[in-house]
Length: 142
Image (cartoon, rainbow, N blue to C red; front, side, top):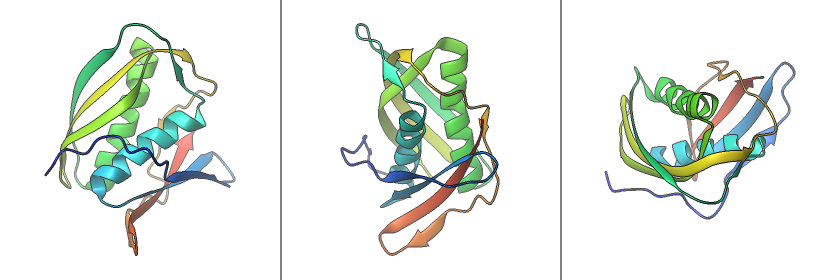
């Protein structure tokens, strides 16, 4: 699979949800869907990175399907913020199939993170094909 880097256009939107916090994500393909999901998550929490030195990390994850892999990806990004205070603004998917993800992420310590998120949930989670590619609604436990 060719490398996919962070696109310039944001293709996510916050949507109404009764219990937690939800947002809908669209992408032309699975890699773009994963990138947009991460960008949407960071946008919702109001993440701002500190200026100065940059940090690059490799992420390798496995899942039983695309949905579980997407949840693992986003929860890994939340974990890196919680455990190391990091956020990422450059997301490069190096390999992605239904069960494996390999990514390189570059960012910095966060200077602002306005809302705590406990986890990304599996609530009604389904990656759907749409005319322009793929779409998923993600529910966040806050």
